[in-house]
Structures are given as C-alpha cells and as structure tokens.
Length: 196
Image (cartoon, rainbow, N blue to C red; front, side, top):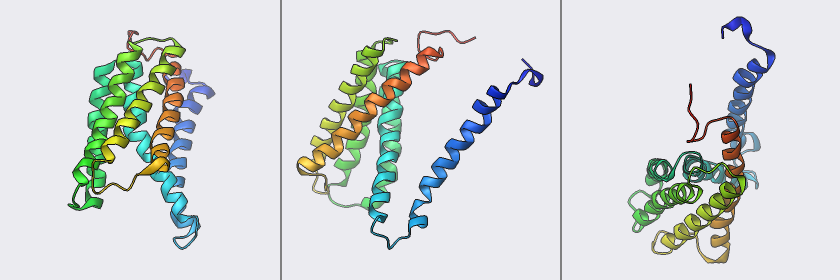
C-alpha cells in the first residue's frame, strides 16, 4: 500500500484519534492549573489523576499483556511497570521507615495481576474467559497489595474505605481491559495470530 491509497478512515485512526488521546492526556495533566491550587476540588483532581496513572501503569498494562499474550509477558511487564511506579514514588517517601514495603507492594501486585491473568486465560480469545481472568487477577492482586500495605509503618491505606479504594478500581479496570483484550483479538493482535 502506498500513500495514494490512504482513505479518510486511515487518517482518522492514524492521526486524529492519537492526537485526541494526546490532547486529552495533556488536558487532564493541566486540570490542576485550570481549577486553581486553592480550590476545594484540587484534592479530588489530584486523587483522580493519580488513580488513573496508577491503574494504567500497574494494572492495565500487565493485565493486557497477560490476557493477549501469556502469563510470562504479564508477570514480566508487571515487574517492569511496578518497578517504574515504585521508583516514581520512592522520592516522595524519601527514606521513610517502612516505605520499602509499600514500594514493594506496587511491584508484587502488578506482577501478580499480569501473571494470574495470563495463567487463567491461557491465550483464550473467549470473552467470558478474558473477563473472568481479568476480574479474578485484579481482585486477587488488589487484596494482596492491600495486605502488604498493612505490614508497613508508612502505610496510610487502612480500614474498609482503604480496602474498597484499593480493590474496586482495580476490579473495574479488570473488566475494562478484558473488553479491550477482546478487541485486540478481533484485530488479530493476540498471541495465537501470525503477523505478516
């Protein structure tokens, strides 16, 4: 295919859609300055943007690779992404007593999510299998992560509220990523497809 065969659809998916995603990400990152640092909603904006960042890095990426490829890809990407996220937060803890346990939970939770998803789905393209694998993997990973948090003196995520805030967003992400994994399979991007 050469450039003369491009259609409007090709330009929409190749240029316009990625640009919209980039502008959306930049817009979310600028919400702090738009609403003002003294606004009462500032804390909510920070909380939501940090939660989206966390769910993307240490849940969605390892989960997706586990579902569309295999448990080794899911676990390895969980280790890598969890490590990146732990490094990102390590400066905030600045040597605080017990911080290593919290940072370790980011790595172990992400590894567990990716590995369990791949091990349960077994390269399946069946939506129910992907969905249940995603839900089970993220729920177990979140519960283990919350449990590791409780071992740290630096932990601030406690009680039933902390448990729900740790588990429910991850479980919801498991459902969303299962849908995306099915879309990946539709377009031949799964582990069982040969790319020409």
